[in-house]
Length: 408
Image (cartoon, rainbow, N blue to C red):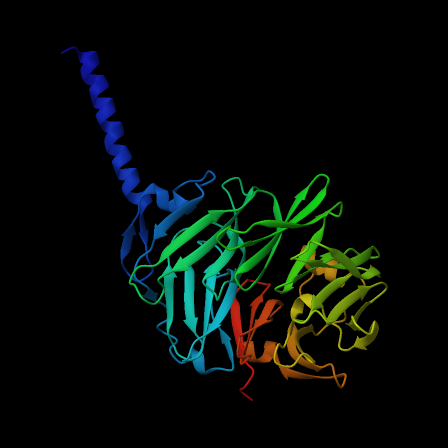
């Protein structure tokens, strides 16, 4: 055998050994509990690949892993920090025992479950979905629409995910449905989702089930920049995205017929939040300063509400439609406050207020800064089904919090 052939074989063997060693270190990760987990390269990308997946794929996860064992008494607090890591979105479901929160971690896409009535916290799915930046939950908290960044950190992909066998098996299965490209906004109601697709010519709106079935177009317009709120089974509210001193509009879309009507218009820097009946809307108007109003859609009357906050920081009670819970910034809100907040130019420190809209009164119910020992800029607030808990995220670090409204 010639010397040249021997050298060639030696180089090939050396490269092979190096590849094996590299694969071991790449595929072996720390689970956080003192052990390691070995995974194939498929696990680094959702549904086994970085390209668009097939119509439906499944990924099986390990047995639920308890977390936060050093903070067993945290659940008794009125104000509770649920997650230490940034989250992309959360949802709740009330069981016979009490309220359960599920959330998806922003960096990894792992799904966690937290009981607000006990110290139990568990990771129920470790399927890796890198860099999830937004998640909308629904379908009794078993499904979510996750939006994540691909490797180029620019392209956004959207998937509808369903978590199965959470309580009846030691293994949890995530089923993923690839949604269309260029989705600009998503909202949900029960087992149905509404999503907007933006194009050069305008926007189109569709409804479908979380599994992708019964897809139906219900909106088409030249208006591109819109935010949606799926307020009940038959109605989606669409509001033009706010811009300072630019007239904004609110539309109702009938998801059965596809018809639409204008509810509000010609309001500078408009931002809105509808109640569950679609009969009242809280809206922000931004001119020289920011003002908050309650608008009765049937009577076409509006009332100024104080203190002023963003509708994005509020949530309606479903048990009492005259009650609104809001996070209210401690500092003054100028005419460009919402736009600056959207862009991340400014940040706020909030307290929680309860508004009695029937009597036009309001009072502070939680001093967040003092009790949390940190500033909280509230985003994505929602109530548990029994309305015992107000759940929200802190825009400063995307951590998840709960406030027990029944505790004094």
